[in-house]
Image 1 (cartoon, rainbow, N blue to C red):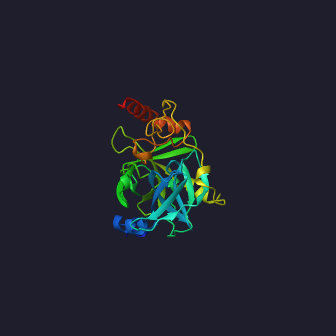
Image 2: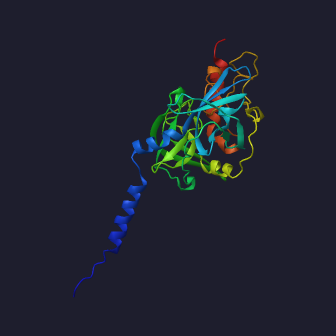
Length: 287
């Protein structure tokens, strides 16, 4: 009796493997395609003094996505493409999710292809990711890691990743192996190794459906100050010039602190211990 063999399953498996390889791109290709659409953001107070440095990326025509805490407290701000010299004025913000710490900025004097937004709901532990931004002002830093955890509480989600983030990385895109944006860099832990966090890019996609005419940056809601922080009149310390927080530093007047990036209990639960430690360090610093 002859045995009949079906090659259909083998062909299907080979096709699936080929498609998977096609979706995954070489890191150098992802970097080359992404860099032209990433920007360095610089914010200033009314007197023209520098406030913060952060990252952002194009999501539409003359539209840049970043973290709210990068732009908060600014009177005006500029954006420039990675590696370029020309800075363009940010005319205001056009959409905002203050709880997720995401804002869309209008930059009519600057244009670049928008990055492709991926499906953040398909992100799983172990996925390869790439973070792009300007840590410590080092423009166009491209780093690789994996999704180490997906933190959820109710309808809220944070991606925990091992790709390095530092002050200045805030607002930069986090990409999957296919080069699609799946998150926005938002926070890192000063207590531990490779404890970095990103907000799902689905927040950005939702904001793109709610774009309105630009409003001035000065109309942004003020940063939320940690309850543990004590007011101070001394510039650069707690109070109006210093905010105890767990969000990426982004160098508010050059000090080691920034802003709380959300007011949801789940995010506070994830990072409350880190926030308390940073507050203790700030208050313990000698005068």
